[in-house]
Image (cartoon, rainbow, N blue to C red; front, side):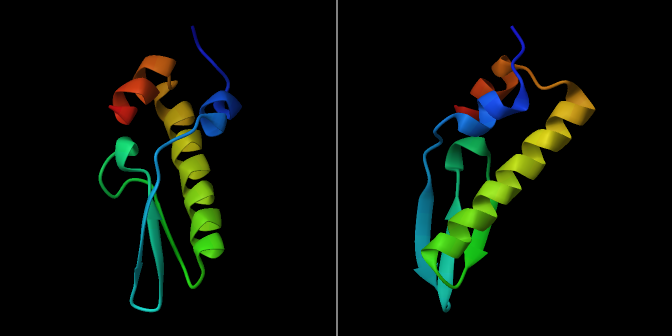
Length: 77
């Protein structure tokens, strides 16, 4: 079953963050190393950037590969 992109954006992904070098780094480790991350001077800015990166990544995958639920679930493992 295929879902629209919003389905995947609404899923809850584990998020890791560290404070380093004057800001915060955040990423979704289940989506692959370095594929979806954000940086900001505040944690809120970093999370906003992370959300934008996740959306851009999923939009690209939908466009190029007709992303299916199975592909996202494999990324989360």
